[in-house]
Length: 239
Image 1 (cartoon, one colour):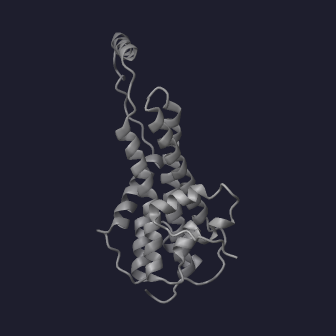
Image 2: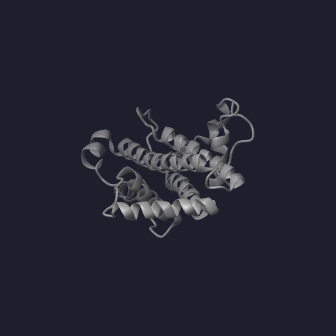
Image 3: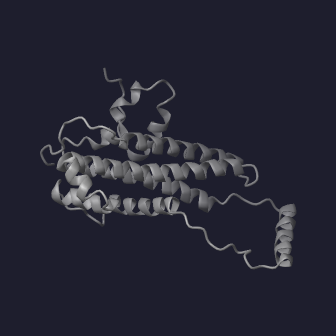
């Protein structure tokens, strides 16, 4: 581990922790909806729950990515100076910012074969899919009115005899994507804490030391994320 690099100074408008908190809340919702769908095991009965799960996935992915970029921006600006970073490096990609910080500030090689890098690449791909949404041509586009009516009749006839099953492959993929998103955030925190003892990245992003200052009932969403990421939660409140 390196000596302390990150300057111990107050920073204004640093929202990485808030974004991470929103990602953890979304992950909590995903787990809840997953359990509900599992109990119902019916496509018809659980459509609303599946919709809630999909919306929570978007939140988890987008806010995880925002948390990482916010953390990188803050760290680089604090170490290089606000003007130096925002005037010259702010337009770099998330990966570019991470490589800049790792090479020139942390002086730590960025292992592109490690799980953190893999999770980050996958997270950013998913984030881009949601943020830069692109529609595509419908399979019904160009079909005649008679062809569309025939397809709809076939769907209705199938529904009379057989209830559609839950698409568990898709549901489990959503769960995997949400887990990957939080693993990417935690992997970044671990990377910074390993090479800068004054970074306190895990605390900034996940605030584990402050979990018991919340009101009763507000810790569940954090605890689920902590269990996934193997973050140690203190057993007694900090005074």
